[in-house]
Image: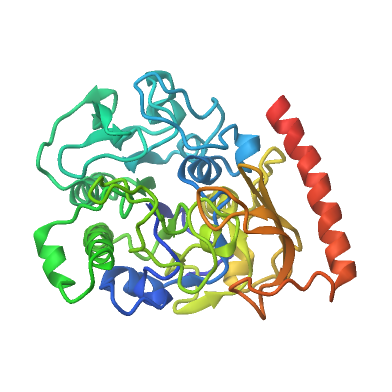
Length: 437
């Protein structure tokens, strides 16, 4: 490791999976899915064992990653559509634009899902090079966006130009394009390579070679495992580019997921939409769309061999909005002064140089609310997944003793409960100010 007091300017690679659950990665306990490249990344980095997304669904989760703000503050709180006229993220500084101001080359390869209309395309938010899809999901081979079984829209872009790669598996193409970006820019550095995969989001499409690797698994889990294995291979190609160009040591690599596992099928094979059980929350309660742990706690890794201890685990809670200030801290060598940002830099805590700040973490989605402080979490009107009704009207859980959120301890800790209620009420008022502004 190099001296943290005399850092070099790191390259940055952000790998973002789509609908990957807590129990869908080998280094987080999945014994049935082959993920050697991500497991290796975890072995060379810091396992983030209590890392959260800011929202249990994709668009607001991605907005928080790129802006460092809560979804309501960033201006995206719901899943955005896929029509060519769909607006998206309001104009504001992003991780890409801020790093661009610092001399970084910036590229995005994968799923944007923060606006399809050209005025909201990723090139308007600081990305120099862009390849991928603008909507939320596509057929992996035709790259056509289907919703409700009608009005299909082709959705694959090179910058602002529509491109066709019929028959090419999108996950593989994303990995190849990201690796090429690294090959092109590593000699001149530094660079930001943002790789928001659309895997393993439905539709459940996987190449035959990957289906054969997991042929022993039952239907549903087999498709999920094959898609994750294909994504892991794409990650491997990206990591090999870092090794090949000699920049691995001085590159921050982040891996995470945009929310927990989906229960949506949307393949129209069985006549149901809410039926899919191939993804796993790894024993956590809830799934995509829920503010329970299974919807918001995601498998995450951060590697920076030159600066961070390898093979360690960071046990403190963190959120995707913390990524922007943490990465800017890494780029600048000092914490950024960004009063408009809600996240905080965790770089010194990740180094083990200081304790993370004491704070409360907040969530809301479609009438659900949650707040975590320390080991306790208050949830209000929480669902098990995307659809009503709520399964937990109001409860406090001790996440250290009960990560599966089975036992309400509110009566046993009345002072904690009252404090969490007060904090949530104050945050709801703050949130109301954001959305009414």
